[in-house]
Image (cartoon, rainbow, N blue to C red; front, top):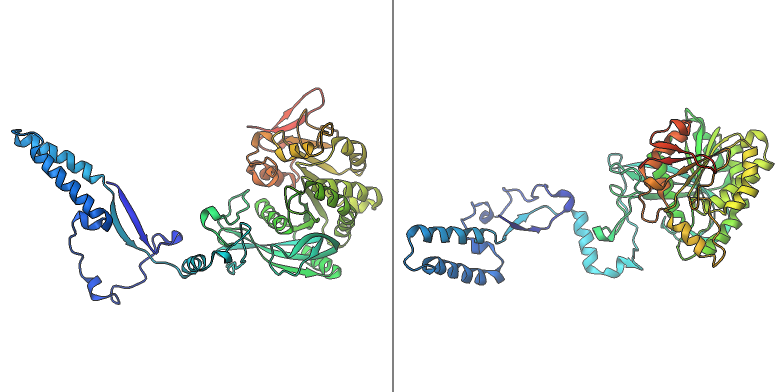
Length: 464
């Protein structure tokens, strides 16, 4: 039998919640045993008359469908019609408690949609204060040469204009129900109009600091760690400060990284249509990034530093590291144990001839994740016009970039992201590989990777 359930005041998160009104306090009428109701009475009012007509017609048909038929035939006809009637949906009222939070959200929606929508995004940022059983708090330190806005909203705290380098940290909550590789975000399709720490990765607060206070706090926290490690993450194009901060927190949480999580956020516009502007900005930020990396090595107290760059951010990161290893003392460059280039949007020839020689001379380990399914890198080549489609370092077309001193890994077989461009943090196999990478496990001993040999040199590939 099919049932159409009408939920009165339903909360999706409390399906089995008890009814808030007790039997003792309920009106007397509601405490009486419910009277037996006819099936037609359970139907909506606009369907009762049509249902009655159908029932009467079926009864008449059962009685007179076959004049002179035997009593057994008439019973069979009635039984058949009864089965058809049983398939008609019945309306059942199920009283369920409605939590105050859901009631307030509903009232706000019905009171004024303009309070919710603003260019397709929620205007309000009213995340609840998280508790330890709901979400874990991850601290992400940052340096940025973005401009400080007048907004206190974490999503617009920093803009995309260029400015002097500033410092601070963000406290980000990661839900206990977090799925590895996911960057949980409110979805309008799920009727989620504001961040919820129990479901989403939320930037709870941002604290700005001066340079001396910033590095003093880094040294203090490094001193409390059993292993003085840190990673520095440089985001790619079309990323704003808020998105980069959430991504760094997700990576630290998924990697179970015991050290400091640090980002350098350069002034990307945060829009996929602003590729040219972002390309100019990352070039402008390279000198600032190089000084930031030097300060991290000298003043943070971290003894092992892992550098992770993504997309266009790898242009500034790779160039900054090359300049750092050339001009910095040997003990500074030695603290950078690994350079991870994920989907790097770098011209192959520029990297091979001008950047990599300095990195190789410093003895730094380099891991390159590339994919022939990276649509964003394909767009970067198209955007340069006819005859300017030079191969990018992060693609495997026409063949992967292979050089001595670089572990090149073809990530195409396990790439599951929509654009094929954020697989460094959105695929469990990639995260697992980075997990063992930062723990010193050689690529030939890591799970799920096979060696590929070709005339141009050997590289590695994830197994399908």
